[in-house]
Image 1 (cartoon, rainbow, N blue to C red):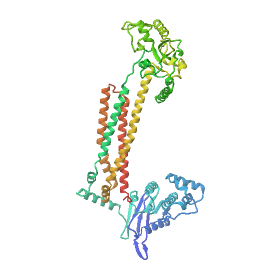
Image 2 (image 1 turned 90 degrees about the horizontal axis):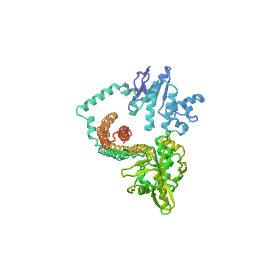
Image 3 (image 1 turned 60 degrees about the horizontal axis):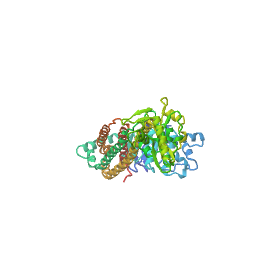
Image 4 (image 1 turned 180 degrees about the vertical axis):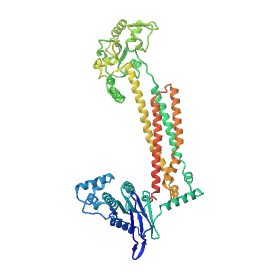
Length: 566
């Protein structure tokens, strides 16, 4: 659209010579010029000419009082009291996330908020051309960014002509008009030529990008923090490996040991594969490892507060062989081992420790020391021990030998342990050992990752804080760089190139990976998933640190380049 206008006069003095201006669709025009050259008069004249040519146009004055105080904000936008139309206006407000303004009336708004309402009014009228006089007057930083986003959005279906002294609004403009010597000049191309001349001058020996990069402070704190984080990652891996490489001893396939945890001989037979009897509910395929671990920990805590109780002879195992290995003398507080009596009367020597899996695999077995074990002889020895002690004895340790057709899961499902399930007893078998190995591996992996993530959060906080302090120390250098006419995007690239620490992070990552592989080979278990997950989390933290630093640097430079920054 071509708009023709006559000379703009004030008191018979020409401010702007008449002429023709072409307004293209989907453009944003910025009118620049010193105070008093007639920018507002030009904007009003163009608006009037558009109206004379039956063009749908809207004008937003510089004055913030263009509000109908007796009407609601939606009515101010829609310019009607029709509820259906007001609902459509409400959708427009929500589109730009400005619905919080609707909680107030026109008299409660600030000057900047009133300008936003006037802008929404112009948009809602679906004008082909919107004329705005100083759109960023009385607006804070966030609201200016909002106006920029709105302009770029409505540019898709209308043309915007604005007067501005705000260089931030020039960034969204597609065309720039400048009023010079009483004429409207489109000097966008001249600006580009001027920037090229300045760039050539800088490259010829003046200011350049390397100057800023070289005078910025060296980032020593970041290197120290990265080194400490690498050592911490290796240390946690080193403390994690022993628990994962531990291999628990197994018992006979058909053997189940049940005992009181405070028994001295019971403790000798006990390994980490023993769990509280109340925890047999963990053997459920539908439970996750986390749920199984929670049940186990709950049972372990409960066993700590339970009183010591005896009476293992209440165990119902009529279909299986039961060997009562240990008794507790309630009167004298002494433990008696049936195997010790057995070896005293039927063996060559007495021992303080017996591996039950070597005795109860078969009905009869011959040991290296010549001891022949039989069920009949063992039962005879047990009765003889009870007769000789003449004390108040309670069984505290038994070994069950299951039938060959029965496994551990079916045994506990039959309810054979119901009579002692609530007591302070422990159970041990190959199944509990395997279960405990899996749970400890899961817990070790989880604790390693959790600890790494917790330390990683502290690492990111300290790294971000030290980086911000470093940028703050460089603020005067950035201000000087700004004052010679450099663009903020160039400054952002220099900051990121100086402080991204890509090479250092890569060296640290390779070092952690090499140490991890060496430790795994040294410990003889090169396939521990937790160790590789540790390296993966370390890699993620380094990557996240780079992204956070990138955003901090960008925001800091943008703040320095903001015209309000001091």
